Length: 331
View 1: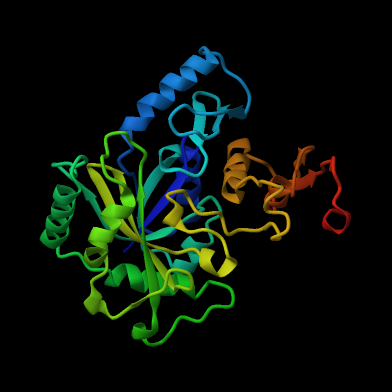
View 2: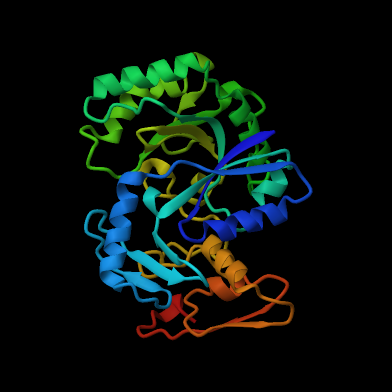
């Protein structure tokens, strides 16, 4: 059985779970929602209740979230609100997926954006120290040594997924593999040290020097990620999407990486346009329950993500206007 970690938008996670269960219905499958970053969740709800006044509305955005300084997207399904902060941990629900499905089958699930091979997931009785970095490092080392942690299974799963990447050949000799390590931590005022300092002190614990892999921060084969989802929930995982090959960010920014699904923006437009994540478009299509032959019309399609990803059941139509055409850049 292979173990995965996958972040999906908060509020749409039930839709994502249903879609994954349908896609992998012929295989053994277990999906568990990983512990949430509780510190921020309560603040989210207070903020949304204040802004919405208990009234339901349509999909939209609330700007300038006080602590996180991000856009808060809000919408509604039939029974509950859908809310998320794009690109950061508290805006996601993390799924721990265990399955015997082939790597190629899991790789192609369209409602999953960032996908990781889970090397180890810890739900701790004694939380990681938030106030002293020395104590936190000692705590982490004790946790890892107690469980005899190794990255071998996660790296073997990465190799199977990397065979699905375009224009990439997995090196036959492991000693030629290059890597980098990132640390992602949920936002909380309780931490008295920064994640970069903690990562510097723990990188040799996450991937021991004796494993023989070479560090390369920009031109790497695989990215190891330490997740501190909250002080009681830690994970180490290997990124399974080819973000580095496409020139898009990984986890080193402490945000979620970009989706690697098309349509992709050319470099000369990335500073002018923002696209909806393709995985979010697929989740909205799942929520709409599009039937064969139905038409999905998006009058403000942007680069066309929603109509592009309608799939084989429906017919996607979309358009938009350009207020400031840029000669050869826009047709």
